[in-house]
Image 1 (spheres, rainbow, N blue to C red):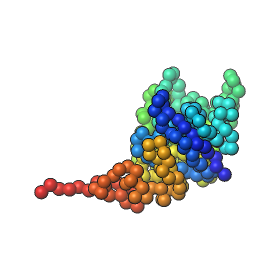
Image 2: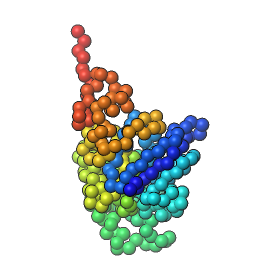
Image 3: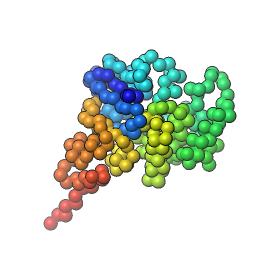
Length: 259
């Protein structure tokens, strides 16, 4: 069963088309890494799935239902989206930021209940943020803010999580910590995880599938080891023979000493 299905979608910014007749299916239970060069359409694809951008033609189907048929609140119970960055227009605490993930389950003007509080505390603990619960989000480092956004998405308790380069501001220890959390959600709660990654070794270690993109097209969507082969990486990213690519996804550049 496909939880996400894009049927012949077309999308562009102004006069500039990006997707033309793009179709892809992402199945239930996948941990799918989206990989590709800058400008290939990875972020735009996530935003189309999340309903943040409307496609010009074609259909986006989420959990068997056409995206445009969802209300905003209904969609927020199905899909959680973690952006690359968050522009803040007001100052709130880390706890209150994560509590925003519970909004789809609360009626207008309804206060959080004990269940909401317990879920938020759990996600703060999972993302190693409990000691920062009362701190202003404006006082956080880039990595702390990224973990807060992930905790907020986890508090939504949706069957689908979309994450746009969530590891970009994290140190190496927290990268693995967050990937471990996402992997547990995927395996224990069957959450479909779709994540944009630039780190091939991490994608190969954690993802079950990968979706390789270039210039607004999906080149391949398959099990991760088939997609992120050294040959595919070299071709997609236009890497010359001077770049050495291991089977584990590590890319190094051959050093030539001038004589």
